[in-house]
Structures are given as C-alpha cells and as structure tokens.
Image (cartoon, rainbow, N blue to C red; front, side, top):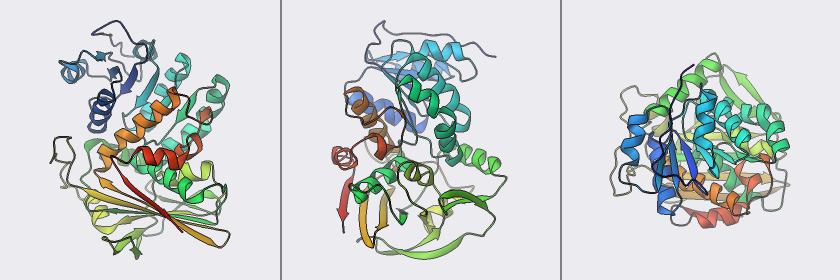
Amino acid sequence: MSTVGSTDRRAGTAGAVVVYGATGHTGRFIVAELRRRGITTVVSGRDEARLEALAAGGADVLVRPAAVDDPASLDRALAGAAAVINAAGPFAVTGGPVVEAALRAGIPYVDVAAEIEANAAMFTDHAEAARKAEVPVVPAMAFYGGLGDLLVGAALGERTAADEVHIAYGLSSWQPTAGTRTAGAVSHERRGGRRVRFTGGALQYHDDQPAEQDWVFPEPLGRRPVIAEFTMADVVTVPSHVAVPEVRTYMAVEAARDLSGADTPAPEAVDDLGRSDQTFVVDVLVRAGGVERRATAHGQDIYAVTAPLAVEAVERILSGRSRTTGVASAAAMFDAPDFLRALAPYLSVEVSD
C-alpha cells in the first residue's frame, strides 16, 4: 500500500470542492469551472508534482495528493471539504474507494463515469450505505449518462414510466483521451469482449455484431448513419428511475470509427476555453402511452461540457436544490428542465412533442 502526503496552499477548506483526478483532461475542465464560479478547489490525485503545477498561482486552489489504494490519504484529501467530484478513470478502480471516502466524510459524491459496469456497481454496491448516511451520490454526471438522463427527464415531464427510450449521439468526430481509451479497455475486459444492451427491463450481454441504421437528427445535422445499440451509460441511469423495458443508444458512424481507430489523436484546443472543434447533438426520443416526445441538446466538446454538468450538480446539492439522498441519477436527483436551463451558456436545448 502506498502512502501519499498532503500539501495545502492555505488552511481553509470550508465550502471547498475536491476534484479527484484533477490533472486529467476532464479534471482540468472541472477545476477551471469551479474556479470560474468562485468555488475554492482542492486538487487531488496520485501525482503531487502535476497537482502542484496545476495549482500554481491559484490562491483558491489547495493541493492534497491521494491514492485510491491508500484510504487514509483519501480521508486527508476530503477532510473539511463540502463535496467531491471524481474525474479519475477507470472508475472501476477509483469509484468504490472515492465514494467510500466521501461517505466516511459525510459529503456528497459526484462522478463523471461513462463505464456501464462501474455505474451499475455504484447503484448496487453503495446505495444502502449512501442511504443510511443520507449523503447524495450522483454517478455518471457527465456527457454520457448525465446529459441523456436529464433530457429523458425533461421529455417525460411528470411521467415516471415509458415504453421506449432512444438516445442518439451525433458527434462530428471523437478524438478520445487516453483516459477514455483506458476506461474502454477495462470495460471490454470486464465483459469478456461481449456487448451489452438494455432490453426486457434488464442489462443483457450478447455477441451480436453491431449494425448500422439511419437516424434523423434535427437540422442542420439531418439524416445520418449511426451504429445501433452502441450502448452507453444511459442504460444504467435512465432505468434507475424510469420504469421502462427498452433503452437504446446510438452513435454516429464517424465518431464510432474515430473511437476505434488506434491512430485517432487526442483532442486539441481551438479556443481560449481549451475546447476542441468537436460539435455534438444528443437527440432523445421517448415513447410513453402512445405519445412521442423529443428533447435535443447541441453543444461543443463532450469533455468540456462535462465540467458544467458536474459542477452544477454539486452547487445544487450544496444549496439545497436536490431531491433526495443516496445514489440517484441526474434526473432523479434534480429538476431536469430547470437544470438544463441553467446550462444555457454551454448547451442549446429543445423539448418538443
């Protein structure tokens, strides 16, 4: 077991939010968003030198190294903090230790996991402890899982059941980070190379080959080929609070090819915010009781937009604008339409019949 020290740039941590995995690609976006909102930030992770470099010149940034195989270091990292955002994948490795440390500290936990099995484990393995501790735990509060779940919640309105939920991802490209590739490899290994779908009210693993079909996105994207049953974290988040037998997710063929390409480069910044030139459309179609409703979000850079999703979640929890405690997905924890309206600077959202 490793032992990691703790270095604070200043003593005060009241109201601070810990970002575990702060030096990663998405972690940096989250740190920047917290600082933009004036929230004192604790940066944490294994590499103290990289944490110090990230925090350099920031009086509102504290440095607290920690390792997931060293519970005492995690406890020191979270001591006195208001909440923790886990941005360190693979979440199959980090999710359990960090949420357990959050529960010991009695503070809310939010993560940005896209790994299906890691998200499922959060609901099955930690729900009882989080409920007893009366601590909010929100997994998959990210582009994959969280955004789709909020759009489904907005489309459903007051309904709590649906016949089918379809979520299509129209990405102009997908330049995966090293963390995305590592998490994908871990998930692939955990499944024994099998694919997964949510049908008949349950996750099912299978060996069917992927198939293409067309999806008609709102203009200007229009009709595009997608990989059917390109299954994402929505198959965990949506059924966690919606009675629904079928949840299907789809991915633009171009983006799926980028992801599978070994030579596809990592994202490159094209603006002052550090975003890539990637654009996206998330198109949700919900069928319930013979009625179809749609909710669609447009934006730029799937990694960058994860930051306001996670930080808005933490701010809402800390300001008493959450609905429950224990483990809950985005649309179960928050008022979905109101949450989406708060993301207006980052996303364009439309809900229609």
